[in-house]
Length: 88
Length: 545
Image (cartoon, rainbow over all chains, first blue to last red; front, side):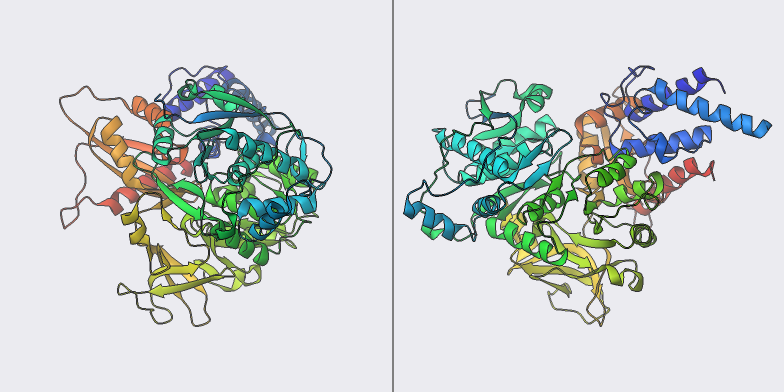
């Protein structure tokens, strides 16, 4: 799955959860009010079921969860390294 | 807004570096009457502790440390400004609209030292709800800071006064009215709870309520001035309030750091500040267990962690206890109507009791299980849990009917079903009323249903709790629209919920239905709706398993 598809799906999910169509790749998640603990839990479960990646505690940082873009970067990176290890 | 609007006091300025505050410059009589009052007046008690602790740290934030002297000085500045206001009379309500901070504490105790009543409210309180609180309490002042004021369009029209907390030259607060007949049963604070869209209930707590519950908590958690809690619960909520009050009244050092949404930041804060305890709601411990290095990172200073504000599944409590050993894990139970705490499970019993156990009453509280005729039931039988003690609320603010429903002959009827075993241990057996707990907040599904009819164009709505292993408890909302109106789309409904409801009331799932399923009695089959919501929720997770 390419990075852009991932980003689009993350944005799509955030639009569904918040009902706000204004979400873009650069929307600040904190300002958009989605970093409360209840929404964070939803977002984590979404990422893990949608992309089949596991986010460890070191991934749960304000930097990773800054924008849909930064989150998509991490997911793409994780998927790429999973593929590499499968190929090896 | 109307001319009866409260005055906005905008707190600013950092902590002052003071030596020991003293009482010597007061007249002998005033000083004496204060000392007499200190036993039963919450503000005066804090004053006594602060004078005693003086240069010890009281609250450390990410950027600054406030000593007890600085905190007391700030509270006195707030008090003197209230007293200087010609509209202010003893007993008047002061809304404290601040995030967890030293300023919040200065605002809360400042209101009390001025002889007023503190009304804590979250800075993000929905505009309509805040207006209702102002109107119902007839608040003369609201204490905030510039960030809170900036974030709220609804407060722009208030008259403002800036209060410099570092102003050590502020005149000493003197509200020496008739102090000799102060009993401690006077109203100290009103905590608004539960209904957020409907009519919120104001729980009235006296000085005695707050002091006695703080004392009970200090006793069973063995809190001393050596303690250093990492404090993450909202101060304006009964549970969070009980944590900061019981520690400040013990001369302990409160740490405000870390972000609950990022659990590892809490572990880092516990390490960095050498914290001795952490109290939280069940969701916090789910996150810590699943998403942090808890159990791997050494926490040598930790004495205990404690959960309340809803039920953490027993296996997770056991897992918590295992991960933090030799520190202890306390399971606790309480209600705002009981100031905060009613029962706790001594950690050494955690592995030996049923998963629904709430242990035994905290010191100074008596618990009983009664049947519908208010008669105590035999061991093992299920009935309503009732409680009595000095921590039971004065009642609901301006709601004598609501009060009479919950407090009868000195007993608080908790609305929880429970049983007591032969050894005297209590177990919860469900709720007799429809209230549920989400992220530690009390939620009435009926309030969401009312909201759906009022704001989501539903002609009928049903809200049910939905419990899943991953998420804990959330709400699911089923709505039926009329056929004539242009109906809101799902995302419009969700956006409106998120904009206008407190987070814990926002439903996890909204489903539009044409008809509601009925049971044999031709009533809406709520258990079926609950099951359907839970199945669709669990299904979304199954892919990973």
